Image (cartoon, rainbow, N blue to C red):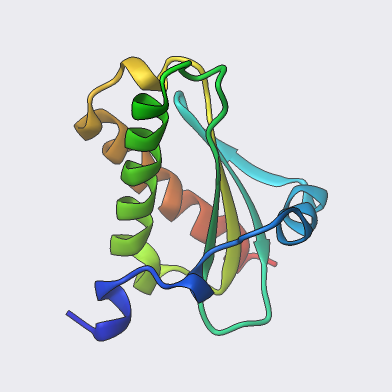
Length: 121
């Protein structure tokens, strides 16, 4: 496994609102049952990840953190196959009730669809 895929470093994350805003303004998104992914091409040589898991999904921080761990791990494993883009994953209500396996299956499908959408532009 390449060294870059072994870790999700700080340079692979969207960290503040200023980095999230251009992704939402592009209005390119892919939706599944439990997640929506907003995407925008970036001028770096790697994809970056941002997450939005609100209290509407679950009032319990433990549940929200579990969802974020699943998103990060799925992205970490798929990042070498993605074009340079910024992705913001927004969780939907109901995803806190699902098993990790179900969440990862949906995310894996959404990454490939997001990749196809960004390759067009």
